Image (cartoon, rainbow, N blue to C red; front, side):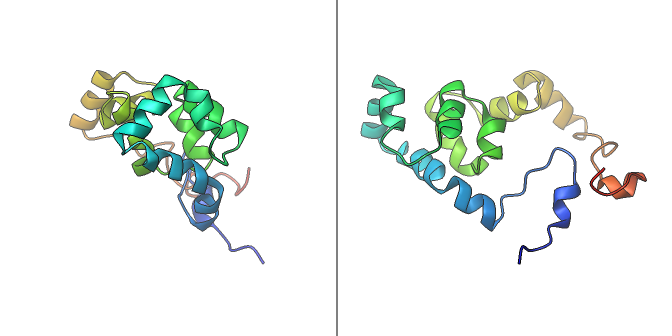
Length: 134
């Protein structure tokens, strides 16, 4: 019996729960491997060959190659593990967060300085008067 997940009703939100943990296990282990300089060197020498050593899905491998952080999160990546990719690329957490929201690093920083994203459009769908699952 599947557990009820009321948090699936929040637009644009992916919760890293037990199901996502299982889905992204090998992806997240790959990310952790980038903590070792010798693994980063092997990865950058031939990214695809290094990824093929991991039991990741093709979707996950493509998302790594594309540096599509949203796709990585949707395919089970935890942002704290994914940070190993963008920091290995010389990118900041702020840069990655901006790219996930369609903003530049500077636009993202300005939004956060000004209080963050508006709650409008980011509530539970049923709080906004919409039908659940609709």
